[in-house]
Length: 238
Image 1 (cartoon, rainbow, N blue to C red):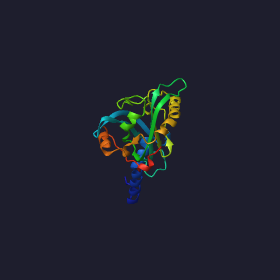
Image 2 (cartoon, rainbow, N blue to C red):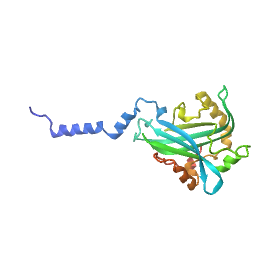
Image 3 (spheres, rainbow, N blue to C red):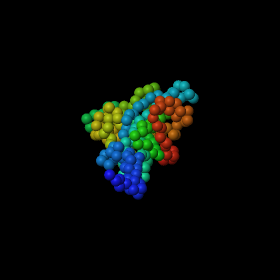
């Protein structure tokens, strides 16, 4: 039986196969970005807190706020490179005070907020964003002689993420403290913390704004993840 494959048809077949398995196309298909909500493009995996020793201040330490997150897909279906999600903003808001009541609005005594503006996140790669509270703030922010304990997590926290101008779904358990069990409590906390956090503007620092020796110590616990590049410091305000 005669084969009807000519050099021209073979070339066209090879081109079709190359397009079918082009990495960018495969990435989009695997991620499910065509059907998934843009508000689920970036997922917060976990939020954790720990004290960081200051080699130049033996009496007091810093508090590190660590946010682990994963870009699932690029919410922009017209993106030049679907393997990367550009212009990602990660905003952390922390509060100390009494537990929430039925109204969903906690009584906040101290609040801080900061935004890390990232160049881009690679799809399907776990990334770590870190913020820091300096010892001077922790010691002076409350009436307590012992200040805020850097070893203890705040009473309330919320992490909000934007990617390409789209706000990510805030209902995942990993984005807020257990003391804020649903969206009404999260919204109540954000409202209650707003004015207090503005008074403490600049007190919580994205990782690229802390002294290098603190940043370096903080990286010790970030093995196995990618630490993304921040945009210039001038753009890291809420």
